[in-house]
Length: 326
Image (cartoon, rainbow, N blue to C red; front, side, top):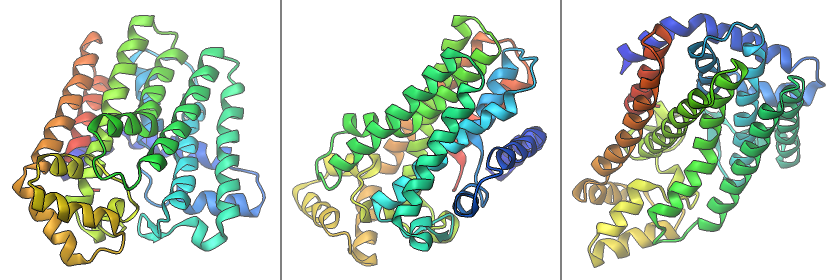
């Protein structure tokens, strides 16, 4: 995983540097509180995968313009806005090893800065004058909001279905990945076929990325994650490892899982017992298998494009979605 990550980073380091510069430019000049909160969550440890996907998708479609880096910031600002809102709704305490913004500056400030970042992303999009891009960003914003509402309604539902889970992660994660990739093709004036291929790549990459992310809550450590393991369950969120474990559990195991789900203050010993059930019922393997299906679908969509360094990077990013540890 470390080798794959280094391979990708070596190839995109200039793009990432340009994204950082564009983000700083698009956040300035704004008054103190916006700057403080935005920088608190945007700059420490962000992967920048969403804006990077937009840039690479444009390049794959032979983009020759100079505004790709600027427009790519839209996808990081949208993502950051959802993080600010998510942390508050979920009652989270840490993100990337730091206190969440609302615990430092208060709920009102976190919500309002999240709203500002959403508005800023729409302003940047409007400046392109491209109606297709404006529609994409508006639709993403709508989908992410619906995903949050669906997740909120689904909290604490012991027998949550995999179908509902997939709807949640489509709206909360895959829609933004899909939009970033299709937007890259659109600014390059690519054919409808290429726009659709990159949309398919982005959608499936997003689904795999979120499944792998949800799996880390049960396979990684607090030190690596920058938050306490089991955080999803403590926030009442059921993800695919637990959904599958509950579906395949016997009556005694079901009762144990139910008690943990309904008690957000479950102990470390409770969590260890849950991990034993996940291992026994092969929930980790099942989640990895489902995520891998989407990785392969994403990579297959890229076969429409001729072999190139950019296509190889996008294929590697799909592999990395499965291999990462944080």
